[in-house]
Image (cartoon, rainbow, N blue to C red; front, side):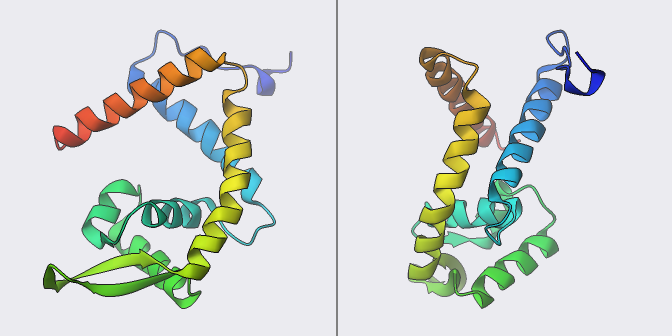
Length: 151
């Protein structure tokens, strides 16, 4: 097998390195799946997070998206210009602005979700369904624990 197609053996590496390697590889699959749609992985991430919320503050969005705050603001500005997202005052606190998905944004999100689901299925195809369910559960528990610990 050529060196570039061999999988790195990371079983004895720290978990954070293994998670990073898996994230990098799966992100590349999603980015490739989005080619030709006119949208990039970072745009998908933001659109997906906002579409799953009923309004989200930029501070909460910044916690969920791995990019510097100025870059995130520019990305959200671009998605607002493209009419996929919009900003509105928080009804509970008029000093705060929330980001929402627009009707057009929901339609684009639905269309792109199919491409992302196909990449997700490709990434997990090597695992039996029980292992996929277990992996998802473990990743969610880890995410919840890290958020609760405010790391």
